[in-house]
Length: 284
Ligand SMILES: O=C(O)CCC(=O)C(=O)O
Ligand SMILES: [Fe+2]
Image (cartoon, rainbow, N blue to C red):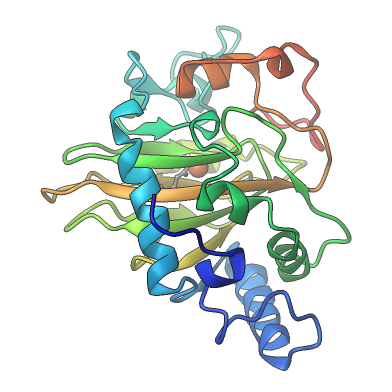
């Protein structure tokens, strides 16, 4: 492992002094993120990491790449569950499309890693909480999937889907040389309405509401993935796309459902045997 960096050295602290609550630079970034999130369900902080920080995070992901989990089943619906036979065959809940990406799971990042220390760094959570305009924000308590790396090798893709947790921040560690683009439809569903007709249109190829986000290594992206349908297009380059994902929720005690965690990450823990906590009644 490279020499250990403090969390404030992993980020570009000069531009983003997120642990200094009275700093006007910090407030400016918070305001900008809030505006973008309200308009779009998505916001980007460019070059969030220091060069050494980005290097350390990328090294940690690369060192664990051989342990990436690829689900044997390559077909998924947008809810990343098993479908529902009570609905018609052509209903979005029963439409299965290819997903071939893999994940390096949270349990593979020990407490000594930069990735782990950044995720549990209190000033980061406080900063994100203010960016999101929430009173409180909690670590997503899923021990398998709360901090993961999405691995997209050449020719791999991640199908259209919704996330379980409400707020995700993603950090691109290594972009694809071509393809591997993040596409999304802001607020396609709400906590009151699944908007199945709108999901159906997208699955049938309607791209009228689809947005694309160009990200560079070191950018930090905010994303409201529980409500915005999103996908990562096929990696058409020759190198791997690597993206670090840190998840948070407004409610404490949230973990993924047993079925979803088993399918996506290949393992579950005792935490997954408890009843699921959700702030809404949406299909996962
Ligand atoms: O790789 C990305 O940009 C998004 C990953 C994602 O949507 C997920 O892991 O749920
Ligand atoms: Fe997602």
